[in-house]
Image (tube, rainbow, N blue to C red; front, side, top):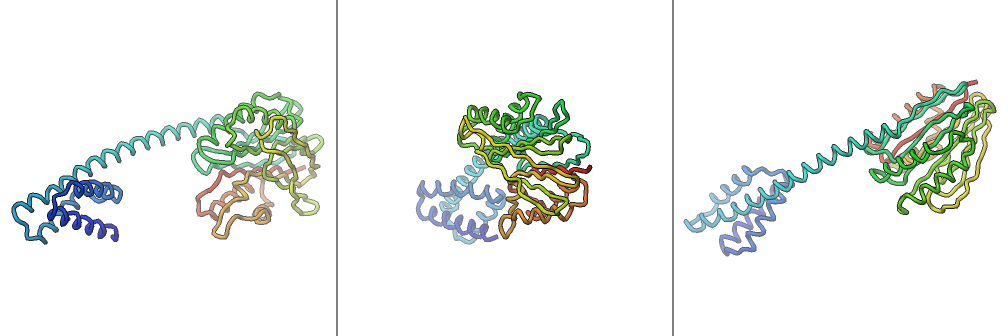
Length: 335
């Protein structure tokens, strides 16, 4: 309402100045005003009504009556031009939105992964993009010995560039040997691919781990990725899955250290992207201890229900508007 009052006052000023001095510059101001009218969705009939009101307020001569329509004409011309530009931009935006929707659907298909069945292991995973395109990537793969490989990568950034980088990581993963027992070697191979093919302004973190169901161990390596958690059922305590390593693509000859964690019955491995711990609230980011609290809240449930419930709680905490891509994976040994 305040803006409409301002527009009315501005229109009156332009009209009064032009009736006193038929200056071309004043007509230009009238055209500029028309853009504001479009932006604030003021319809042409409202402008004509305003013009009529102003005319009634003035004791116009035949000449000034005619001159006043110069202003109205300029505003209408500008309005028409602005409206056509607005419609053209809207058409382009709709076309772009449609293309992004198709690309997002293709990405979902290309990066899709299934939660594989492993004897004695309960697995849960949830991955939700903040926008249409996902800058997180997770993948499960089983080798010929029954070992489960888990990949989790995160592009520092969002949108189409991040999605393209994730697609490249996926295809690089597919080209690797089926025998994926060495997480450090996996990251070294991917690091060379990223260093050669990704713009230096893009940064990718990644964790790759292998769960051995015969030895009940989780061997992993990290490329600057958010540290996960290990939950000890015996001690009822959470520990950080410490793992250090340079982000992918920084240095071509980077080596990645491997770590191993013994997994007993009831223990859990928890992996996640920084979109989980960087959940923003009015008070700021949640702490890692806050995340542990959410896990403890649902720890009695199956792994998939744990991750789903945590996602719903954190989504609600952010008023259903994710600020970053969200991926959470839990492995729970059941026997």
